[in-house]
Image 1: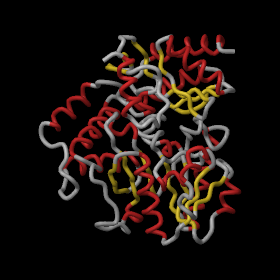
Image 2 (image 1 turned 60 degrees about the vertical axis):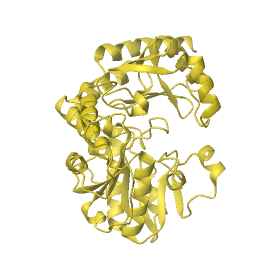
Image 3 (image 1 turned 135 degrees about the vertical axis):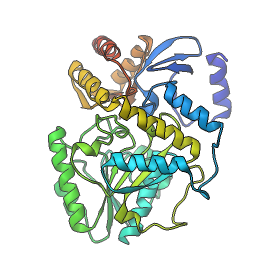
Image 4 (image 1 turned 120 degrees about the vertical axis):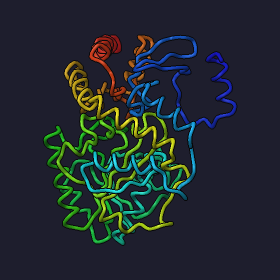
Length: 390
């Protein structure tokens, strides 16, 4: 179908909840995609940090194809070999003695974390950070500090408190005997690729102080790794840069390279409170989804894609003035919504797809397989685009 035909069909039959780019993508290979009109683009969005292995990766395609010919879905009424295998892999790479709950998205992973925190502690209050994003379901929305998302759906989950991101003194004063959990993103993706502190070194101190506070008060430390996980920052999970062990880790996006998988990793101690019937997911951890997850995790480790993310990220951060981030999670604040949109449009015309987050921040979250030649191409074109958009 031609683009205009697809657009007309979408506008007639699809609920209009997305502000879409003026193109429809038809195929991809590696870090490149092509639209329905045959135009080629370098994909610096990667399904919003989801296509960890890029597009049409042979190992991922093979895993999905072979599993589809065996079993796609059987429900969690049965033991699932791939689910057990992927759980083992994720628990091992986490560096924390954990157990996994499988679902389908980051929001669902955070919903599970809210429930588990409340059940384990017997408390009700959840503390989250200003400028946070944890999802759009009713529970995760309550701990997402975005009024434009919240306002139409209020009242939200009660006993939720938002504190300034990065201010440990205020956080410490905010906790009380009813605090069940503190939710934190070590780097805020939707919030504009922001650290809680000025740099990684200070952020490490902040995260360690939070861990100590949670230990002292019996509070669950929940680290949202939905966007920062799966090797994107140069380590499998971003919190591993800090030398801490969260009580609960939530992740999704890149875990299965584009196939919907969400995971809540829960420490053994905390997970002991959950029993049959306490939580569930019809599609979570299906044989097909977990086959994709196994292929992605194996490839990231065997092909040293975390190391590649660290190297390519340094090139982007070093080559772009004002860039911030870690690994292949890079943001550049261009100062205004208008300039950000102008740069996005210009880059599309140059054959590079980029994303704007927090209205004025250019966000670069490409596949972990991206090459130096491709990052150099992005740097060159972004510099030209920034100059022309002044």
